[in-house]
Length: 341
Image (cartoon, rainbow, N blue to C red):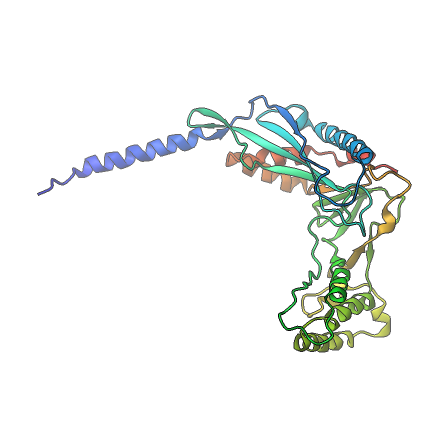
């Protein structure tokens, strides 16, 4: 018969391993005073779009991105690197010839934190926390709109033309709802939803334009009327017509606002975010395409929120602590001079 273990011995083993696990957990901590290094990566900024930018334009733009990176590095947390290595990277963003003029790109900063793991200094380089800024991208923050699709069924209705339907879908998808309440912080600086910042040239026309109820419904009517499935088109068009009939002629000329209570997502209720479209007239086309004319990035205005978030990350020994430090110290006004006029 197998001999039973002594209960006291078993309890000792359990306690011993618990203590070892606790000690290991305590050893995993941020190294806040570890001197950090700065590295800049060239990330093929100009080979991912089809907007036919010339070598002269891309070379000039790259120098301007370096100027922007230098301005970001004046943040005290990056100027005196402690506790993390900083990697600044650049990449291209999708280019839309209909609305974009300047070269769209993104700069992001990786915060590769240093930690003590089981007695060994380790730098977190695998998908580290980051902060980024979009350049020359009027449609930003992943704003939501109607996002209609153009999936064609195997047996489309007679007379269906895919090209016309796709063009109608493009016009609907150009519309989006404002990403939260707008604050005009300073001349040339707006913030949405208390956290999303846009820096722009205030002497130019508005970068976004509101869309009326009449305009929005006209585009929705076209899209569904040209759709490939007769039954689906008639069903949705019937609902849209009923919703449109609710508005008086005067209301149809007012700005459309988001309202999830309707198939169209549209009402006159101004508590919902207004429907917008990009304004190509914003771009100053007397400037070269290499110029930086528009910036957008994340920076909450609630300092208490940032401070509490930073404290929580530090308590949990999380590398995002350094991102919170950076955002807390970020003076967004120093980026205003980057915008060319």
